Image (cartoon, rainbow over all chains, first blue to last red; front, side, top):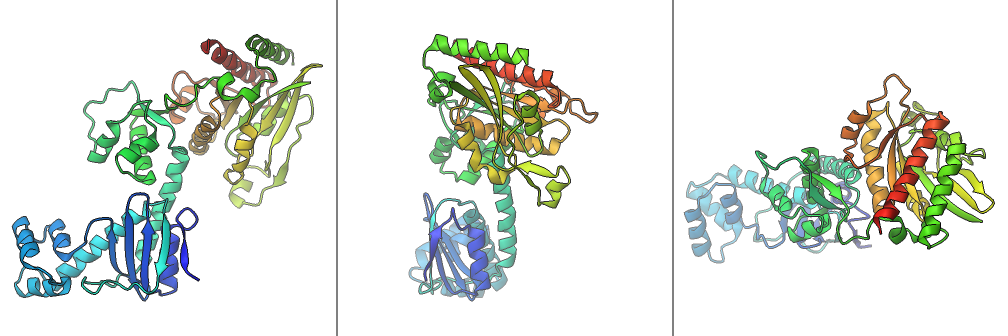
Length: 272
Length: 179
């Protein structure tokens, strides 16, 4: 039976746990809301990972980790041609640019970061392909999943807490009276702050900034905690009045009769 | 016979059943079960699993029903059903249990999302020595100034009546502002 399903029913943490326990070999493919992830395993250990358009080549991993400079990176991508990552790695080691440990540690760190990113995905369709093995032209690692799973569980708990704090992304944000000065915001926080307006729901802000549900919740939670914003109903949502939003609340639709009914209730309760 | 309803919600053990009992003319039709969780058992021995149900008859033609929601999160599927067609809702918070404030806020936001009807927040058990001050609770619950936060003692009929009347006042204000 193919291992396939929806992240809403089966979380990334549960998937990794299953792959680990069953010592599976193959590739987990997840179609997220905006990107696709390929995570390959060998005997239940993480071998390789790639998300979206990032090619995850050895040159780009080492460049991002500041192990090679921009000129070296350019020279490698221009001259390496069809060289595989394994061949390139050997070349770099022999030339004394990096050690074997450098390569392995940086790849492990890069793949772990991608898995961390995957943990933030709560929407997506996944399938595990036994026949798709880790790519031959890339350097594979053998990374135990246990610690990654523990970290994922922690993130899952955080997600549950964030969902408690911000149950619906259909709510909008507005600035509190507190002035937005002398506040140190991260780039992602600024991206969200730029769109704080009762017209924009958090879901819209997330979509515009290509943020996952968890990422937008985490940022908004921080802004709420700092007292910079508060949750409001979006402007284009139904006006929060009884008659328009909850017509079933009254047995009559006549406004005067509705008011009379409320006055009767108040009078009755006073007499209890 | 015309019927209207209001919903009393809040975290586990906030005092919702007692609140309704204080003003209901019938014994509250409670659907309580013994608590199995050791943690929750230390707070109280029985809890509402479907809903509480109280009644206030106004006259031959009008009856107000009060529905209490189950406080435990695993029964939150009931909330949306109970919120349908309500005049407004009361979020009851135990003033002596700050560990439930976060959940109270979450419940409040959830109900606001279900139905944007008027609501008030009632700080219950204000007669207890370790009850939090209203202003501290307002900060902790992150309520803006326009949200009514009322002191309440669930066993005291008068404070319960005040909460209900304030909510009905909010319904009237909402109708006025619609003009």
